[in-house]
Length: 260
Image (spheres, rainbow, N blue to C red):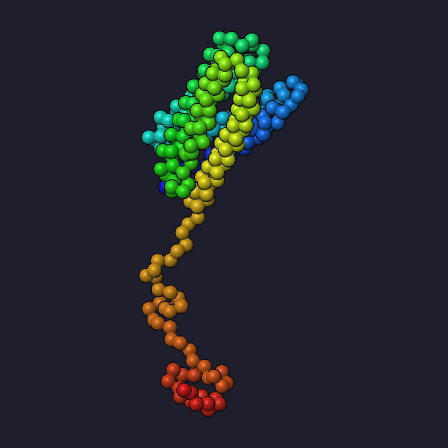
């Protein structure tokens, strides 16, 4: 179980921070897609990109801090960390550089590298989380299909966009852009929620590990029935006047009432 290993509260919270960044980024990018002014669109795009970069940074920090928690998970954790760091670089280059560079071969190469980095990073992250979940109860596992789906989403975008570009149908391309925006928003929102839930699960284990058990063994004598090695005797009182009576009394010495 998780209480057999060491994990800090700040480490668990890094997933929560990453989740919040993804949720805020999803909302900002969705709002930006409705902007009619180029300046407003670019401003929201940059803010959303920065939030995504921060989210990925928190995930990298989390993976770094839990690297040695489970030896057989070290390989996927290393792959995920490398993928995310590379994804950070490519994501920045693709989105910022794409605003100033004329689309061409370099754009396609950058897009392919971004797809590969996204796929490797999130799939490896899910594999690492799945192995790490072996330390938890089944109800508290932290791996999720959302990571794999989000990792594959870039590949899906690229294939569909490539097909539509050869079709020459601008109506389909326009529809795809809106569908892609909505799907991207839903996936980023789901990704953020899963990361926050993961953080809460880890925090629950950390808090539970600090509480010492207070249960008393079943074979321990209760003070209600025992004092040392002698059994406590029940005290008897007169039902008429309330005076204390002896164990074998048949009459009350105070009021003379007969005892049944």
